Image (cartoon, rainbow, N blue to C red; front, side, top):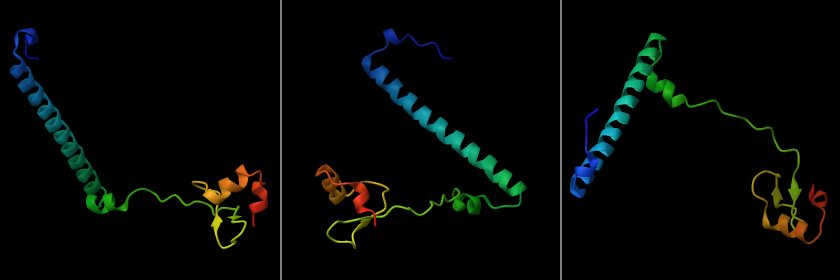
Length: 106
C-alpha cells in the first residue's frame, strides 16, 4: 500500500485523491462483476445452456393461494376487498364506527 502523509497534502490534493479512490472502487466493482459473469457463462456452457437464456428465466414464481375471505362494501356489494394489502377506506370507516369486520364478509 502506498505511503501517504495525508496531513501534509493540500485540500486540492486530498480532493483529487478522493476522486481517484471513488473511480478506482467503481472500476474494481465493474471488474469483479464482469469476472463473475464470465465464470457463470462458462459454467452454463459446460452444462449445455446459454447463459442469457438462463438469466432471462428469472426466479421461481411464487403462487399464492386464493384468499378465503372476501369483504364486501356495506352499501355496494360489487366493491370487494380480499383482506390482503392495504385496507380500503370504506373498511376502515366501518370498523372505526364500531362495526364488526365479520359483518362485511360475503
